[in-house]
Length: 288
Length: 270
Image (cartoon, rainbow over all chains, first blue to last red; front, side, top):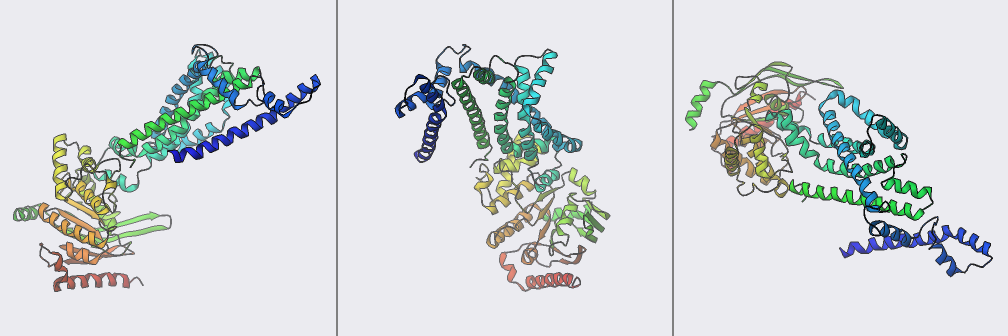
C-alpha cells in the first residue's frame, strides 16, 4: 500500500506545483496592468500573493478550486442553487437513467447482432455512424424535438446520455457473446442444447468480463452525455449548467469546481462498477 | 454382465455403420476430399481407435458420427438412426482434445452442465455427479475450479462430464494429446478400466501407435489426401490389459502392422 502511495503522491505534488507556477504566469498580466495603472512597482512577493488570490483569475490556483469545491459541497444546504451536491444530483440522476437505458439498449442490440444475420450485417455500421456525429450538434435537436412532443425534464438529457453510452456496450457485448470458441459451441451441440440454453449457459457467462469493461467506458460516456445535454439548452440545474453560468459570468473558480465535481462523480461511478465487477467475477471464479 | 451385453449387442446390430462415406469440404482453394469411400462397422462394446497422420480425416469421421459434420455421400447410421437423430437422442458423449471446462463453473458444476441442459432432477444430478467423479478418481475435487487442477485432472473431469448422462457411446478426439507421456499412460490404464466397468462403445482418435494398440479392440489406420481407411486391424489382445502387455510379442506385432499401414498410406502420395 505504502509502496503505491509514494509514487502517486509524488505525481500529485508535481502536478500541483506546476499548476501553481502556471497560475502565477497566466494571471501575472492582470497584476502588472493593475500595478501600472496605480503607478507602483510589483515585487516578487506581491506578484505571487496577488496572482493566487484573484477573484476572477485566468487560471485559479489549486487552493481556490479546493475552496470552491468545499463551499460547493459543504458551504450551504444541499438544496441550495449554489450547492454542488444539488447540481451533482441533477446530473447524476439523468446519468443513471441514461446509463441504464444505454447499456440495456446496447445489450439488446448485441444479442440481436449475434443471433440475427440481418442485424449482424446492418446494425454495426449505423452504430458506428451514430458515434461520428458530434454530440454537441445533435443534442439541441433531440431536446427541441422531444420538447415539441411534450417530453421534458430528466428524460431528454438521459436520452443524450444513452446515445453516448450504448456504443461501448454494443461493441463489448458482441465481442463477449462471440467469445466462446467452436469447440465450446460444438460441446453444447452434442448435448442438443437449445439456443436459449446456449445463451444462458455459455454465451452470457462468457461475456461478463467484456460487459464490465464496456460498462466502465459506458458510464463515463453517460456522464459526458448528460453534461453535454445540459450545456446548449440553458438548463438551470446540473453540473453542465454550472459550467455554462460560470463561463457567462467569468467565474473561473466555479467552472473549475464544477469540472472537478464532474471528474469526482465519474471516478466514483467507474469505481462502483469496478467493485461490482470484482464481486461478480469473484463469485464466478474468474478472479483467482 | 459382459455376457448379457454381448447378447444384446448381437440382437441390436452395429452401433456405427458407414458405407461408402464421402465428405467433400468446399474451401476457398476449391473442393477438398476429406473422406473418401469409408466403410466401417463398430459393434457394441468395441474400443475403436482411429490413427493416421494429420489430414487423414480421423477427426472428421468422428465428427460425422457425432453429427458435427455432414457427409456429402454414402450412408452412416448411429444406433440404426441418422447421426443427427442420434445426436438429438443424446446417444453419445464427446470428449474434445482440450478439456474445455467452463472456468466459471466448479468441476462438479461442469459435470452438471449436460445434466442441467437435459433436464435431470436436482437429486439425480447430484447423484450422477458424485458417481462419475468417483469413476474418474476425482472425489473431493468437485468444489474446485478448473484452474486449480492439473491438465490431466482437467481432462479426467471432461471425461466425467461426457459420462455423466450415461450415453452408450463415448467419442474421444485425441483426449490425451496435450498431456505428457507419464500422465498419458496413467489415463490410458484408467480409461481401459472405465471401459471394462461401463461396457461403453468407444471411438478414439489418436496420433500415438502404442496408445492405439494398447487401448483398442479394433484399430482403424487412415491416410490423407483423400482421407480414407487403409487398414482395419482386429486386435487379438485380451480385453484385460496390464501396462506391461506392451512388451509382449503380440503387441509388438500389431504395432508393427499399424506402422506399416501408416507408411504405405504415405508412400503412394509421394
